[in-house]
Image (cartoon, rainbow, N blue to C red; front, side):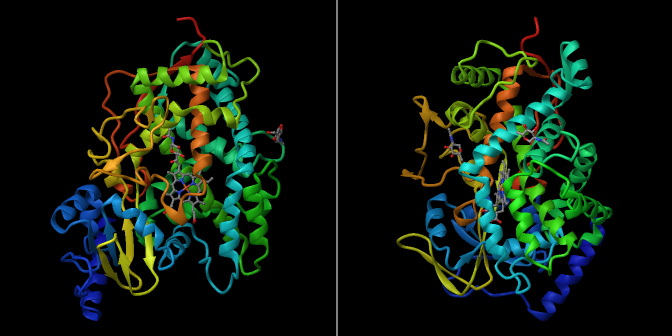
Length: 506
Ligand code: HEM
Ligand SMILES: *[C@@H]1O[C@H](CO)[C@@H](O)[C@H](O)[C@H]1NC(C)=O
Ligand SMILES: *[C@@H]1O[C@H](CO)[C@@H](O)[C@H](O)[C@H]1NC(C)=O
């Protein structure tokens, strides 16, 4: 398969060379780094180890340089001290041009910002507000119910599987698999709602399986490898999309306002087929679980690995909820309000720390015109229309000057004197941006509050009800770099853990 790609890219690069002959650096432009295979440029180096690649170039060329990657000239801004200035130049730097090129081919819907769909892009943007503010309170309540439902029935002694688990003392499982099965379904139920006659969709495991198959190919799709080159991926994507056809969603109840509103928006456009509408809903499924599941995995993994951290976070939880030592899951459910979740600063710091360690998203802007990009008071660089400006916050997250011992998980790294710590420095200057797992500026992830909330809820329930330990004799989880640039990295392979009811006698 890879061979086919290489041949194809080789062919494209030959044509490219013939037609355009590369480009030459002009006066005032940043240093230009082009590979020897023109079309592929430095994509292969970048893909192999993006962090090392960028670091090497930063040492050689300084904080700003342009690399030719997979058909795009990308200017990387390496120093976080320059980030605020980039974010201020939103007028000349557009985010949606890029997503509108990538998302439609990845998820299979027609480009949003076309004349066929007047105002639809703006309506979609407005729908994102329904993930925040007052709506977040409703989403949080609903998520709590759904998490309890899935956890109880499958793991805590409610349903059959759960009862077995509860009876036996310790149960074991794959940690990623566990996080995935609970978070995927609870998030799905919260956003899309329940089937007509039941509390849970019967085919969730199949949906999740197809989702994983698609997600494994996601980096290749984003790299614009045509889907027909990717084996079963097209058929799998069609199945995933069909799940959201309007005639099916019609029968779902307790659907979130966010999804309901989006359905209403799509109904206004005759030019959208039912499959197109379904593909939009599928894209939101990816956005809502694609990063959240691995983020949940890392949050839980680091806590279980460091029992002192886990105990400290559990203690804070009991303190905020004013609970005695442990909870019996057969008791009426604990309610944890949005306000209480907000008070859990140690837990929040632990989550932020795991995001710092596992996120590798690239923030991309497209230059709307030839212009001079101001870097700071002294410096500016020339940028051409269509060029990409890229921030790569993982560089900052792993900078030992900003975060001492950057490879080490410190659950309370973002706490000082019991409150959130917000002063982090580079070259003696206080940083405005020091943690960016959710992107930046106008394109920041609209689901970030919901995401952190749901991870907190998940951790709360686990810490209240379960003892959790890693199984001995296995390697540590490592980051799989194959989706560097695209969000939260997955572990290279799953790790085994064990759990039992927290209230069970020792
Ligand atoms: C830990 C979990 C999550 C992470 C790390 C994450 C990260 C991101 C990032 C990096 C972006 C692109 C922003 C940019 O380039 O500046 C993004 C966009 C987006 N995210 Fe998230 N996200 C998470 C969870 C969620 C959830 C739970 C939802 C929805 C319920 C969501 C909905 C979206 C949407 C709709 C966009 C596109 C925004 C646009 O087109 O303007 N995300 N996310
Ligand atoms: C809808 O949600 C409410 C509150 O979360 C719950 O009480 C009710 O049972 C749900 N309805 C259905 C059909 O699932
Ligand atoms: C954690 O990160 C979120 C979002 O990035 C931020 O709003 C919050 O204040 C942070 N909390 C702590 C304790 O670091």
